[in-house]
Each structure stands twice: as C-alpha cells, then as structure tokens.
Amino acid sequence: MLSVLIMGTDSVSRANMRRNMPRTFAFLKRHPDVLDFRAFNKVADNTNPNIVASLMGLTQKELQEVCQPRKTKYDDCPLIWKNFSRAGYVTLYGEDSPLFGAFQYHRFGFVREPTDYYNRPAMLAADRLTKHNAGQQNVMGLCLGGATAISVIHKYSLMAADALRDTPYFGFFWNAGMTHQRVEWASAADEPSLQYLKALQESGVLDHTIVFFVSDHGIRFGNIRQTYAGFLEERLPYFFVFFPPWFKDRFPAAWRNLVTNTDRLVSNFDFHVTLRDILAGAFGNPSRDLPPLRHGQSLFDEIPVNRTCADATVPEHYCTCEQQSEVSLDDKILLDAANYIVSDLNKQLARFKECAQLSVQKIIRGQVGSGREKIHATSVITVVFETLPGEGMLEATVTHHKNKFELTAEISRINMYGNQSHCISDPFYQKYCYCNDLLPVSLTAME
Image (cartoon, rainbow, N blue to C red):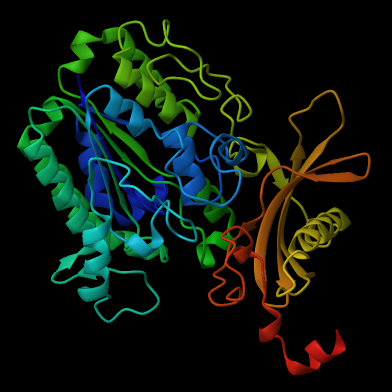
C-alpha cells in the first residue's frame, strides 16, 4: 500500500512558479521520478470548490445535493480521506492559515476532527500568539515565531512521514499565508519549498509514497490579473507528481500513460479519480474493475489528445482551450453582455437589503469566440468590466444565441474587495456586495 501526500500552495500558477520559484521549478524538472502536468486546468473560481472537486469529485451544485443543502459543516461529505481511512490508512490534515482554511473561510468547517491527525487547534493558538508579517502590510500571515508559516507545515509533513514510515497514510497539507494575496510573494516560498522537497528525497519517504505537489489556481487579484496573461495564469495552477523510483519499472503501461498525459488537458476531477485508483492499487489495469465516477478520468489511463473542457468538466469560463479573439472595447456586444451580467447579479443581490445595486462603469477587456454547441450559431463572450459603486472589477463568460445571453459559470471578482462587503457573511456574494452603509450620504438619500 502506497502512502499519499498532498502538499498544496495557494494561488501559484505554473508560470508564476517558473518565474518566482525558479529553484523549486528546476529541481522538479530535473527529478527523474517527477511528472509535470503542464495543462492542468482548474474547474472553479477559488480554493474551496477546486479542493472539493479534487477530494470529493463533486461540482458545487452536486456538493449541495450530496451533503450541503445549506451552508453547514463538512463532516458528512464524501472526502476521499474517509475511503483511505476505511482501508486502514492513517489520515492527516494540516493548514498554515486556520482563519482562511479551505473548509473554514466563511464556512463552518468540521465539528469533529476530520482526520486522525489534525493541526487546527495548534495552528489557531499559533495564529493568535506567534503570527506576524515581518513588517509587511495586507498579507495573511507570513511567519509563526521565527519560522515562515509555510515551513511550519512542511516540517509537520516531514515529522508525520518519519513517524509513519512503516504505516500507510494519507496526508493533505495546505499553505496559503505567503502566496495568496501578492503574485510576487511566491518568490518567498521558493527556498522553503526547495528545502522541503530535498528533505523528502533524503528521508527515503519517496520510496513508498506518491507525492502531489500542487496549487489550486493562479493569483486572482492585482494588476497582473487584469491582463490576458493573468487571465490564463489564474486558470492554470501547477501540478507535479512524485512517484517511487521503482514505479515506472513495475507498472510500465501506467507510466507511459502518465507521461503521455503530461501534455493532455487535466482537471481536478482527474486528480480525484487518480486518488481513487491509488487506493485501489489500480496501476497495472487501471479502473477496469472500479465503478465509474461522475467526472474525470484516471491519469493512469491515456487521456484522448482531442479532449475538450466539456469532457474534463471544466466550465467554459475557466477553460484555457477556448479560441477567442480580442474585440474593440466599444463593441456593443461587450456592453450588452456586461449589462446582462450585472442585471442578473443584481437580481441575486436583491435578497441582501444591505447591498447596493450595481451598474456597469466601463469595459476593460473583451474576447469573443465560438461556443461548444456547433449545431447552433452560438458565440462565447468573455468580458472584464468595472462596476459602481465600489469600482469592482468583474470577469464573466456568457454564451450568446438569438439575442439571449447565458452565464457559463460564476462571475469572477478580479480585484480585492476588502471591507466593501462587511455587512453580509455569505461567502459567495461577499465578492460582489457593496454595503449601503459605505455609500456617500447624498447617494443614500437619493435611493
């Protein structure tokens, strides 16, 4: 039984790793047992829904149907570490930013400890007593005492791997504090990440463990996000996998498929199916005797070269394979699309009396391409625009057919909203809400 270790770092695209974590990137590229899945495409906006897809294999709508009919705890959800636990694995879960945890930020997290080892109580105390930002402003949490927060999680992972050397385990670890808010801060994660990977290698852990070294998405805010390069980077996180050195010789067919798939479109749902196959030991004849899952394909099977985002359950809004062309900012279709999006959003925001109604201030960027449905003449429009009040920058993708628009996924907020939505607690609508109590008195009186 192979152990599984997932080490994640928030908001780092593959391109940004190459740019700001060059030593870590070089180490991974040189390693003979590491595979770099270069076309890994996220499936949702932020951390939580992408991790839900990876660890549960569910879309957000399916999550609500299966275990979250309302905003509640995750205890009853089908997290894959439960499957590993039932098979005799020890399970671990650790994060460096407990207030911004993948299942905690504006959510209810867990009532019971979700895994055998769970570092949240210790990290809450550390966050309260030892956290500091080394003089930096507007970042989540760089340091815990004299160590970087990311290094604390790395050390926790190494200690667990050493203690469980003779026991199969499933470990999920996540780092957010250092990299979440500024694209350039990935550079501060370079040396800690490199030393962590070297320590893993020297410890002998890699002889019996499959290690996923991953991110959830690229940077979602800031100046770079307003460029087309930033648009792509946000959708293309890094996804590297270490295999034991003997794996390629024992399972040559599976290894050939894995290598082939490094150049194929891969999503979080494929990650989930692959974890299921690792648990089942389905390497020699992948997935044949396993029941099909709702989404995804095992990376131990060859992914078709002509795979589409629809095949990979990647919504059009997040798909980097779509062929679109830039159009003039004064093209009426962009303004019409933006007005439709804001109108639809305002209908949803109407349930929150504390939030102002929004309007389109200006168009920032727009692209138009052909839709997936080839039978009908459908256009796909991606538009970035600014709204008032609050100067929120929104990005959305809509289809356009017979003068009708339709959103393909949720609307992305691509600049920071800070305290603008302090009046509501809903984690989804906080991205869009501008609280009425922040409006100038003259505007409030006019309403």
